[in-house]
Image 1 (tube, rainbow, N blue to C red):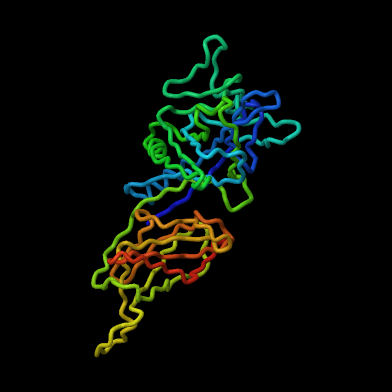
Image 2 (image 1 turned 90 degrees about the vertical axis):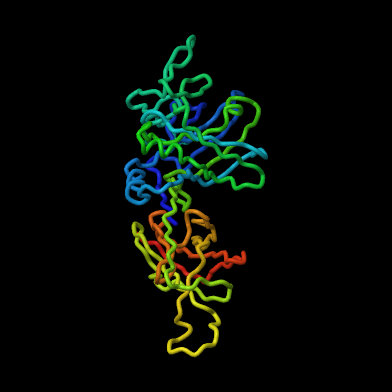
Length: 368
């Protein structure tokens, strides 16, 4: 029932056509294949890094030994000449790199930090070196690919993840990178971030030319990239509470304060009762008899203004818990953009298979 979002500490785009240009302050990460004015085949690749300390802290102190999944998420800003089908790949970068202070359109060109050729131009450190005759020299367990200029990143060969797209799918990146995050955590290799690129058969060829632009960590929009870590720590123990068996029930979130600090964690309580309690002789009010939602109940969050789903129903990781008092679920506010309003929704699948969604404008705001 837990979703924790980690935001990047730096990002940049590596352009083969501009081998020494730094883009560390650009609001866009570009993953494209294109033809230059000189009719040469060129590519761009995105690099992005999330803080090691935060990844370690979440796994040690929040996940606490439970199985978890990790997804790399980037949101599309613009696209040009998209084919019907394509695949993007991510790999764990090998070796440190510097963010830099440049933008693609800077005049004169800013040549510090990471670029196609350099991982850090200030120190003169390149992604990899070699000779024209013998080719590049890659450290053991790593590789890279290039055209005329050595560079374009260096990554671990056993760290690949991919996501395929077609005409019907969303063009946002939502890629399962659990294997890489686990290897960072175990120390198999150090966390230097991800490189995001096209499949090798498309790069530096005339097979397909198209541009993909995603919002970077310096975006001024509500769509920064994130590393989303999910795990199931739900506990379903309703005790003496009866479980609702029909859709004739009322459910309320009775402890929504309406405003929460960005770094807080809120436990929302969902109190359930019969909508039409059966007639019976009793000394207590029938409407006061609390019941429980079924174990197949889940929560979701939408942005109130855009109606976009920020946290979707997940049958494993947004399961709603239950104790002897009521149902409940925890929300980590750090994964939500501050100074915005959000809406909570609850979905339950009853024993007969009927699905009931609770959408009663339970709204809250995240503040700095």
